[in-house]
Amino acid sequence: MAESEMEWLQKAVQGSEEAFEVLVEMYQKPVYNLCYRMLGNAQDAEDAAQESFWRAYQALHRYDQQRPFLTWLLSIAAHYCIDQHRKRKLPSIELDLLPEETIPVDAPIPELSVLQSEQEIKVQKMLSVLSNQDRAAIILRYWYDFSEEEISRALSLSVSAVKSRMHRSRKRIAEMWASQETIPYSMEKVV
Amino acid sequence: MNHPPYDSWMFEVNNLTNQQKKELYEHLRSCPACSSLQNNWEEFHTAATSLPVLAPAEGFTQRWRKTARVKKELQARNQVKRFFIELLIASGLSLSSSLIYMLSTQSFFEWVLVLFTNGIRVLLQSGKVLQALITWFGVIPPAYPITIGFLLVGIFGVLSVIWFYIFVVYVCGRGVKSYEKIR
Image (cartoon, rainbow over all chains, first blue to last red; front, side, top):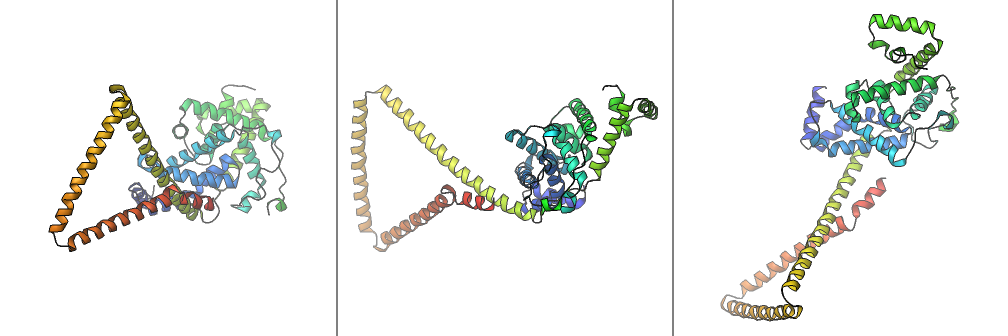
């Protein structure tokens, strides 16, 4: 962690709101990205990211400074997204049942160029067929380079549970990847 | 299809020893099913890791600031509400427990009689206090009672304004309205 980040973190832990806002500015992208990968749409991701930062702010006195701040923050965000899925009772779904366009037409567009990518939609579809915890494990592993131990801490699972979830998820993705046709993307749908 | 240990090795090629890699590649050459799975996984992995990190819409921190302010207001309002509810419950409990105690130790009629006589006694006592105050006010210069009177009225006035403000801000829910506006 850079020295300036450390200083801001210290100030935030001591109760400085301005310092926490700096941390929000610093970490908004990774937190938002995780929420987007977990929930699959921009509006829910924005709400989840805001709520995750609020929860972190509220629990700052419990933050163990030996642990990287981003890891702790992402753990909060992952738990929140898993809870959101449970509350809404959104099951993981079979690929055939998924609609062609998973991103709502009127959703705020974070990066148009990324949304235009066929790969983006294909990857997002792959993630959406996994269970909530499996998806969180895969995202933390391949987007954030978390080790299995870090994933187990972040998701409150045993390391062996993480290993078996990772194996199951990777196998499922591998089995489905080829069967998933590339989806043609239309600009008119988004704009 | 399960081909242990290759069906787990194929997803973690980077963590394998050279010998394990050699064994895996030999198996993949002879098993089209495993080979296809491994290719698919590699394709997904490449696609996923090449995607850029998504950013929220502009002004995320400003929105966070607003949300945090409103949530703090809501929290404060809830704390005041909780305080009033707890106060009400505590008062109710103490009143009902003292009532139960009185009714169980004396008959209700005796209890009313004690209440009545004590009330009369307090009234008489306060009458005496009032008389003493009037005598005292007669002795001291007339400017003092007027000043004290003004001071008391002023203090009660300020306290009323504070209580009214707390009631309007936290109990009547101004915080909730502004939170809904932001949402």
